Amino acid sequence: MMQLNLKHRLKHEFPQLAFAACFLVSTCATITICGGLAALTDFCLDNQPLGLGKGFKLEPPYTQFSAEVMRIQRAPVSTTSGNFDCGRFFRYDWTLWSLQVVWLCIVGAAWYRHTIHKYKSALWSLGAAVTAWHIYKADFIMSYEYWTMGTVHLAGIFTAGGLIFACIGNFLMFFAGDAYALVERPRVATITTVHNNKLDRVEEAYVNDTPKGASFTTANVV
Image (cartoon, rainbow, N blue to C red; front, side, top):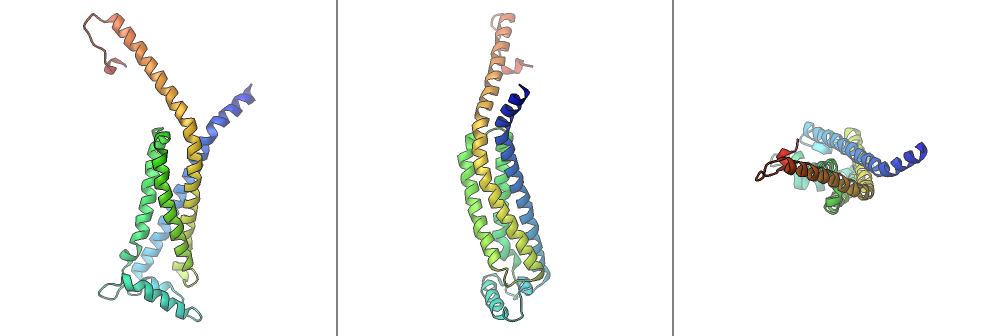
């Protein structure tokens, strides 16, 4: 009997545990992305006027490629003084990271309030858009790893790794979230039914014990 109860409990608890694990992976990946971007931004600010150019290889055979890459990148991000505009260069990266954080907060709030089954279409649509941009950005960063060195190289790998794991966590969260929503819906319905039945019993007792003309409100329920 105990073994049957354990199997029954695991069957009902596994979707929530799987969803929690995916949420944790995505959250840890988001923190990793923040650390990598912070290191890249700090390096850029500390090495003006070259900015990120300080972290590109200058020895053959990378000299020509590095010069060409930085020529293309510096064109839209150079200030009037000739410095590398780190804020403009990383604004998209930080915006994308912020969207990931906002999405996780929304999913976490829906999870806490047991309303994922109500809003999962909107949640997964927003998450899919954010995840698609993560894939693009991870590929963009990895394409520059051949010509980078030192801090830029390590921070780039760190950031790209975080983006990849964020994609994995987000994608798995979509599947685990659907399974969890199927379990969550009847649970919420059961809790609501029990609460309504309790209110009905309290209201009936209140009406029977109250003089004619008095009104019942939920404020009377202790």
